[in-house]
Length: 169
Image (cartoon, rainbow, N blue to C red):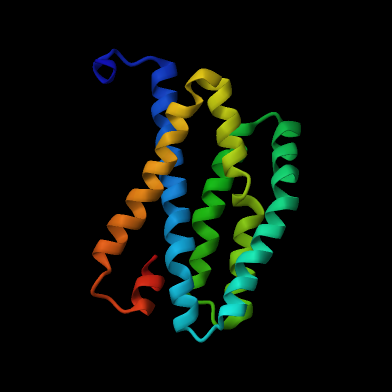
């Protein structure tokens, strides 16, 4: 059985990258699924919530290649990946104190400036570390993390108000 095989550097890297994908996409699942509830319960209109998410998408189109190129130029993709993960965990915490459209929007948009590079940096790390033939095996765990996060969090919050559910996410 493969999971009982002795650990190698490649195996350890595969497990670490799989866990990174599961955690990252699990976090994305919570934010895109449940934060709109919090925004709506905080008084934002559907148009304002749509603006928050659409501008974030537009920013990602610009910033993803910029941050990825910056990582290549520095020659330290793992360091950039760690920085992007820390950024994507720390900056959204401002949503706990932000109020109104501009507070939520600026926090979400600033979060995306760096965190948007996580997927291409992870993808490059997978190909470099475990090879292109194993890419799907690692990337699969992102989908698992996404699905489990939405399912489990939704089950835990089923008796909570939309405000509490969104705020907790």
